[in-house]
Length: 125
Image (cartoon, rainbow, N blue to C red; front, side):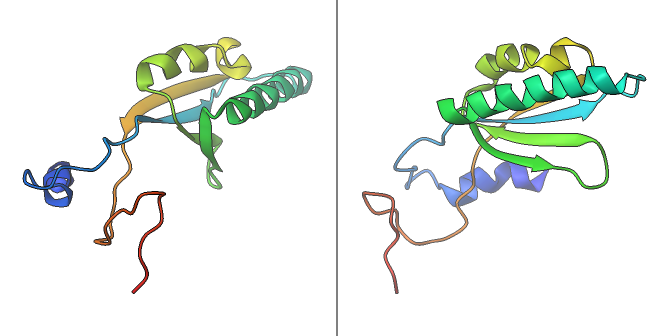
């Protein structure tokens, strides 16, 4: 696939990245289609939100998106995929069998040509 070569285009061999790409994991949580009681979902749902709040406070959870056309929660996490497998397995909805998880290792992609300046700011033109 052409986009697999994009890293070579963004960072040619003679200009390696200043910093290595941050390890990111994309986690998709999908509600399982089995019937559950309202009480069960409410109980585990509250515990799930509390767990995700802890992830956020710990710096593990960077972004969260809720799908509008299906029962999915998409999370961008700052830990490598190996560590995230364990964390995801402990999420209440996953552990209870109410949600399935799909994990993928991803990396950010720099689309601009401005040089990276120490401190994270880009120069203005």
